[in-house]
Amino acid sequence: MNSTNDAVEQVTLYEKWRKIYPLSLYGGWQRWRRVVLSFLVGIYYAGPWLRLDGDPMFWFNLPERKFVFFGVTFFPQEFVLLSWILMMAAFLLFTVTVLAGRVFCGWACPQTVWTLVYFFIEQKVEGERNQRLRLDRGPWNRNRIVRKGIKYILWAGVAFSISFTFVAYFDTPQVLIERILTLSLAGWEWFWLLFLAGASFLFSGVLREQVCFHMCPYARFQSVMFDRDTLIISYDENRGEPRGHRPRRHLEDSPRGGDCVDCKLCVHACPTGIDIRDGLQYQCIACAACIDACNGIMEQLGQAPNLIRYSSQHRDKGEEVTWKRPRLFGYAAVLMAICSGFVFMLTNRVPLELDIIRDRGRLYREHWDGSVENTYQLKIINREETVRQYTLTAEADFPFELKTRKGELVEVQPGKQLTMIADLVAMTDPEQPANRPVHFIVETVGEPHFIVREPSRFLQPSEPRE
Ligand code: SF4
Ligand code: SF4
Image (cartoon, rainbow, N blue to C red):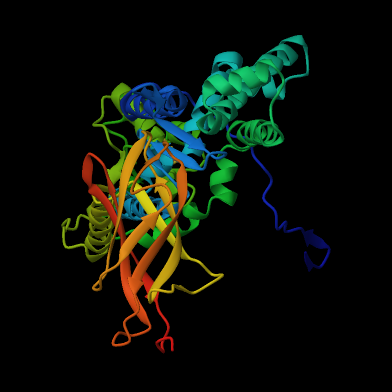
């Protein structure tokens, strides 16, 4: 609070929430944006229903601890692949940001996608920008109550469809529908259905651009990735200024000269409510709505389009665009390296695992004939969606005998593990160390390249028995 003589000025530290009523635009970039966003929404909704050979294509089956992704089953032991996917996504985002700025925000971010869906409903129920403004500024009469009621009911439907689809990725849609109809949902299912529906309604329906302004960390740090050739949405100041409102017939001989007629349509079209003519701002999500709005006006005035356009800082200053961009090549190189590593791991993935635990009760058992026996507990895990038979063998640089109670050919059900006891028997050899390496080998019958070879130790007494 400042006080000078009798004048008191109050400075508030909190910005008042100003509801934004963006214009609806249909042509230009917005048409392509709708195509992309519809495609993404379609993928999200279709995901849990897609099937491959009768099995779900995407299924995060927590009770059985298996995750089906594009029809391939992964188990928790393979979560390292998930970290690779996350790294790839992060570096893809960084690379795209250096190249095309905040194109992810305006074209693919879930918050933007769902906000457009909620906005579409609002616009259909409450009308275009001016009608919505009139409705909100008018009294709470029957018309307003009915329209708001219908809008919120439809929003709730969208919110529930989003949370239903999300939970269906874990349950499968068929099981989820059955549980809803029989009111037999588990606690976690209730929680996620209600929590996600509420979060979607609040963030994408009510808060909208406030999420981008105040909650999204990416909006804050993405500018550090920009270079002077990053694609940005910018207003051509040289052409547009000095701006001024004037009728079409005076455009040519206007003493003010600039092409911008200060109609403010670009501001009214902006879903974040900013004026792009003030320069690049962190609130800009690169949705290109201002480009379409301005191009519409330029067309009506018979002027060239792209007073607001996709550009770059170099281009804005009339400087030469360069491809010598160390930041871009740095991110792209890391992305390529991670992608190559991921592809290598995926193509060399063996859907089979062998865990070996030595008998902790006794290190070894000595027999009357001078032989020594070591006991191991083996766990063979079948990471495929089909029944598999495996052969078990062992390797060592000394003669031994492998004994198992289940035989050396075993069968393991899909996604299950088989625990078996194996004994290695060898003659005591005082010339050899007390602790020698052995390897157990499990090979898939019919798929010899699916083979694992795990090391263990064979122990014998360090001193021969008297
Ligand atoms: S300034 Fe233009 S591109 Fe940026 S958010 Fe507003 S309308 Fe979209
Ligand atoms: S839409 Fe174009 S002409 Fe109208 S105010 Fe914006 S920049 Fe100026």
